[in-house]
Image 1 (cartoon, rainbow, N blue to C red):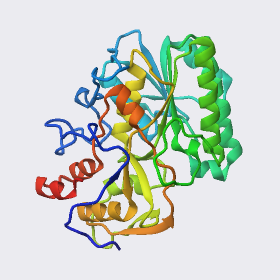
Image 2: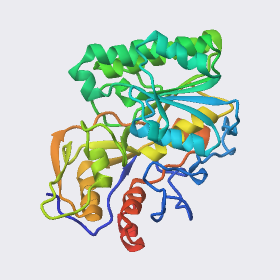
Image 3: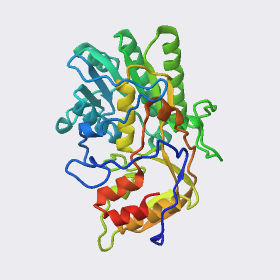
Image 4: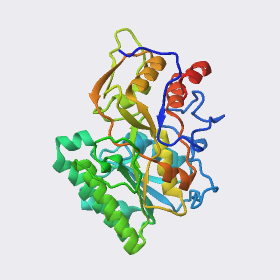
Length: 364
């Protein structure tokens, strides 16, 4: 068990300049409110955007004719994104391998030509946000099925989108394209991609295909290389700690939250709500200055994250021995879209109703 501390938590950040989050007077950042942290996002949570930067995006408003297809909509990120897009006035066609009537998610297996073709035949889709994927742990357990989904299924979706003249294809990529080893510095989009597992290799192959289509046909492809996503509502149990640090309540006999990384490992973390905002920006931006973006993220040493979690949740944390993997430099996204992260300490404290005094201790 990690010892709680009342001292200011030490946070390592990749970029800490003008984009560091200004605390908002409203919304889900500073205090718990109805709809915060439960999958319901409001128009107040729409992306920060600025025209002060060269190449800044002009955000397109929702319209009845602008249907956005979201794949993987039953997952943690897809569910939040669908809520955010609907709140912005967009018509959303949300699909996943399993239907969910309560969340307005329809069934679609992207491995099947007929099901993918039916999506585009049923409505006029102008934007695709593709998040459906077999995640790394499951990919290692069954690399053949994973490749059928992550590569073959995605290329099938790309082909249909191109055939039906989709204007924007936002691809949920991953920092796994850089491999699994961490380094001494943050990696930007000019650094060489070197995936070392089927998951990362499939992500990179799709990026290359999308970039090539953008060059040869003008196809509106863009990829977001996501850092490690944390926040409530994760469906996968392979990395349960990512949601447990937000969801777990202290109670007698409560087992420790197991974070499998070494105390000195550096973890690049981004909250699910921030990822949803990034994807919304890419879906709505009138112009795309670049085709590949690393997501902005906070970088925490595991021990300091554990200290924060224990102080906020009152639940013990057990650490492991794994290393943290590659660290993203999200400067390009910040510059092009004027983006600001919400702040992990803020998200943790607001999800628990933590007092302003404690939040001032926990914030970097």
